Image (cartoon, rainbow, N blue to C red; front, side, top):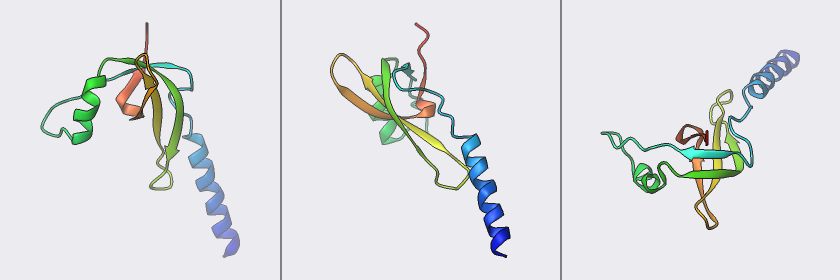
Length: 98
């Protein structure tokens, strides 16, 4: 029984490592997406609204795995001419094409 549990653990680790590739890298320029102010707008959305459309640079990123095989990335992005850094989910930014 110990061997079976060990084998399952290895398979879970392999699944997690396959999906651990971040979409953006440190130093990459990204654009902050426009916030949808629809019926499901949250207080976070209104805070991010002032940054919509701005270009920033990824300075760091982290991943969280709340359910074992799911991985979510959170990026620290420096925006503007100062040192303002904000934390953004992967779906809140896109590659800057300019």
